[in-house]
Length: 76
Ligand SMILES: [Zn+2]
Image 1 (cartoon, protein in one colour):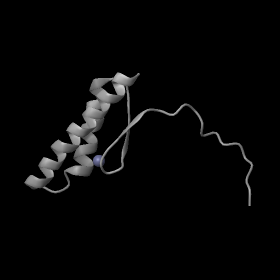
Image 2 (cartoon, helix red, strand yellow):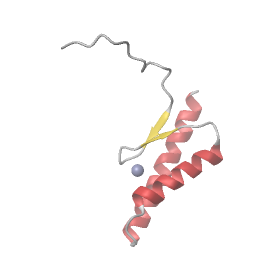
Image 3 (cartoon, helix red, strand yellow):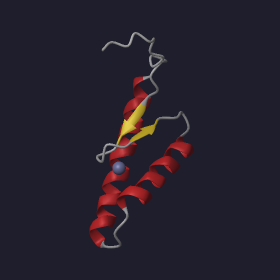
Image 4 (cartoon, protein in one colour):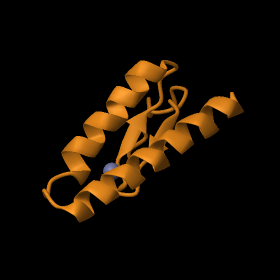
């Protein structure tokens, strides 16, 4: 069964960074907003358990995401 409806998906794809966990975070040209988004994601997804392991994981996630932000930023 074919559906020939026009797809309106091809609006210019917004740049995103992707976390280990698969979550995509929209890349915005604002360092403050960006670091808040990273912080919020880390808090929500990677700091669920209150133990040392979770803390180390959170640090890793933060570093990983920030690296991607700078990578992306240097491309454009
Ligand atoms: Zn994540």
